[in-house]
Image 1 (cartoon, rainbow, N blue to C red):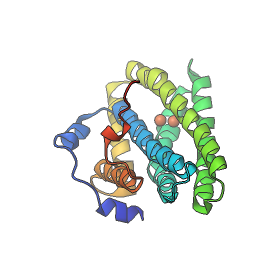
Image 2 (image 1 turned 30 degrees about the vertical axis):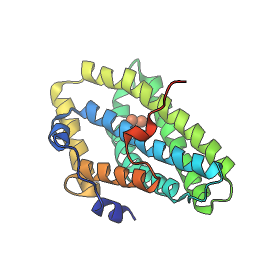
Image 3 (image 1 turned 135 degrees about the horizontal axis):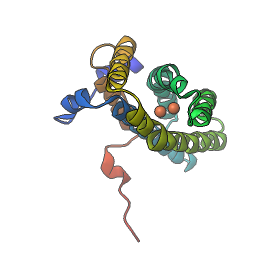
Image 4 (image 1 turned 45 degrees about the vertical axis):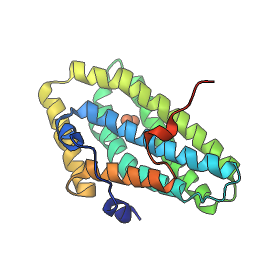
Length: 209
Ligand SMILES: [Fe+2]
Ligand SMILES: [Fe+2]
């Protein structure tokens, strides 16, 4: 299913690919958070439609969980656990790094639970509750990383350490998904959005009353 999604990658906007090549290691981590946001938006939309009694299937929710496991868990979270959090041991941010690591453990359990519930499709309420817990924790988790951890990396790591991290990220991503890994992830997210019935950003525009 993931391979199918990769093959169906939509044409990216011009300039995106060149821009991604130039971003820093911490910007790359922030970009991956935003891709996870897009996955969660597609899952939320699917669960809301199911809750309204729509006959639409929960398959996009299952696919969202698969995507999280493939590109968020096995890449982003592993990079943070192996290359970033350990460097904050014995620093003022040691407690924060410990909480972040603990949250990764809970996220993995929640994704497994959501995938199971969405596959069965029998308990949408429980799926919604699990999703909302996951969503809230991910939002807080990413916000603390982006407002505390990543700026501290930029301020305290040497440029060569930051460059080495970027190189490690690229190698790891390539090992998982081959050439043009980031663009493949964009394609997979885009395909997930289509399968959830989302045509683009404008679908999320709300009008003030
Ligand atoms: Fe994290
Ligand atoms: Fe993160």
